[in-house]
Image 1 (spheres, rainbow, N blue to C red):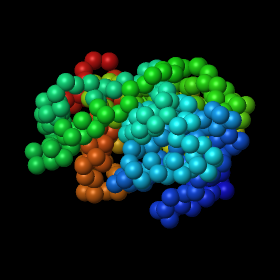
Image 2: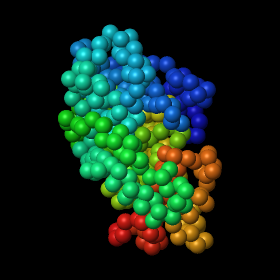
Image 3: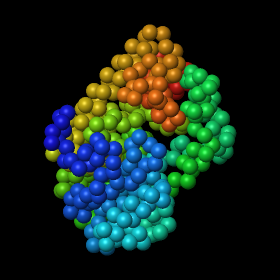
Image 4: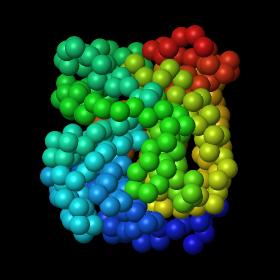
Length: 345
């Protein structure tokens, strides 16, 4: 099935996405199985984890959010493959977000498996000593972004949310650009694709013409690229560079962490890059109309769900995404920027 310049290969996944239900467990390729793992209370609904299996060797990529329901879903899928939880040998997360790395610690406790992240992925959001103090600093940051006082607490990281980030697993291994991860009968080539997070990675099976893309490239949604606490100071620029790195290889099948499988990664990367440039033009237009804070700009932009519907995490992500665009304009020499953002190029 072709749509919007890509060929949808995960037709059952797409149908499930459209009907807002979980897709089936599917064998994507020999030794590669996709498993939906619930992401409670989030519009994305689930993460597509991937089990790589070859004889006694079993690796899980992006095990998903840590919940009892999600854990049961993953174990049930492993049981169908005749694999027990203690037989997992390795766990890779394409990036450190809770819907990817979240369940890694629980799986590792039950198996002794190693955990791997990208070489450049750092726990910048959880690099603090005192959660209440860090939350207070983030609230002040939201104020400099122009967030109305009645919404500051909603936009800022809460002490509990910060504690949750601290509970994410630390890696035993680091995977750098060009590294080869031999598992499940395949040689998976690591590509660093910063943007969505500073150390995001994709895994390429060049022989099988398959790529596990994490959140870097999705078939329909534009992944969030945010200016975050102690994170990348120009994430949008690095995201564009990462999209340009994968602008070929349209014949590869893309196995993303959300939505559904497809072919046409180069086309999709170009569409996403065009969307970024279009969005930056919209941000620049709003800045030109007199907006002087991140919040003033964000509330005047076009949002798929509508600005008034954005609350809590979605509100914060909208602000952080807007900040990333303003920062990109500043480092491009197009605009001077607004208060509360990094200075300098």
